[in-house]
Length: 119
Image (cartoon, rainbow, N blue to C red; front, top):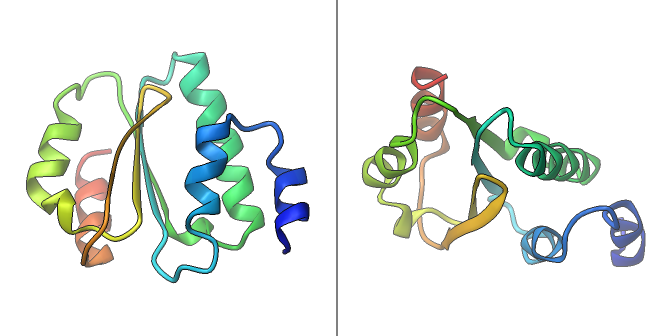
């Protein structure tokens, strides 16, 4: 998919969301973590649209969702457990806003285990 086709498919996303994915096209490791409240319409809209776009790019298997109402401390726990400064190409969305981006090394299995235990 070239940039023009991608932008056409992603034109419903806010500019920062588009930039997050644009910066990762062609990068092997692609991890996006969403944190938000299920009843937050902005958060839901961004998550759904971004998930669709990433899926169109064939990267859906590397997109992870943490969507929470009860676990307000989940982001802090997540950051502490995985030392986010060492995670490659990570975008964290907190209540629909881009919260944090880090670069580094990371084992995706650890992330999957963490998310499975915090659903």
